[in-house]
Image (cartoon, rainbow, N blue to C red; front, side, top):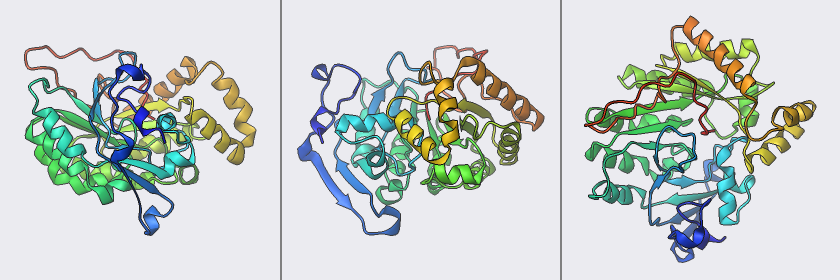
Length: 348
């Protein structure tokens, strides 16, 4: 692996960026337990933990924290797969089973938040790989991360498919008393057969909706990112209705649909999966995504309209201005107006 080449901005000029860690800082471990069989963990002491989102990104936030690289959720469509190529690892099985763990993430974040150069901007988590994937059950990085954000009253948001977030419920409640906390759970569909093949390492959709219900029952607003809506497999009107109905029943404060997008790295892995499981759809996908990573605008708008109409029918509305993340403006600044158009985020 070329650990020495992993920089804070892999897409930028590596010669100008300080490396995050060197090969001598890596400890490799395996655990002979059923949940981690076949998974290799690379423990590293990172040199930085707060990452600036590139200016050209469509993300509605500027700063992220990612304590892990690679993800045992093994979602075949995950856009973050390409990042493993920066480590000389493949974007398929290696992404699912070679997990980089930034073991010093909580301490590093605490020091960063306490720096005079940091001004308390919103920090988003779970936007690259899931910070509540199975590895978090062993490494327990998130309690220290949330505690640091709480102690500095720093606004943050979490996007997850993991039920493990409920372990940190008390910390989230404490943080929400002193700062702006936004939680969103990703549930793109409720079809159990589709879930088993396309998201094999994740909790079942109904278990994720139980998370939404528990959080809202404890006074923590939780929205649902209905992502990805998978063309021709999860976009039938009856499927959309069933998913929105289940989301509404969970008590979600909002629902935001996002259509599947296929970046390089993810595209090859997803199309190989499609060839194995639904070969009759390969040509249709090639046509739908002929112009690039995103489905055509007309298709995205159609799905957004259908989901928003269903959400209104079931008593929940679309997220507002980038919500469910409630990004606080600086104290002296006026809040930004809500966007009139749905935002196509590049999270999944």
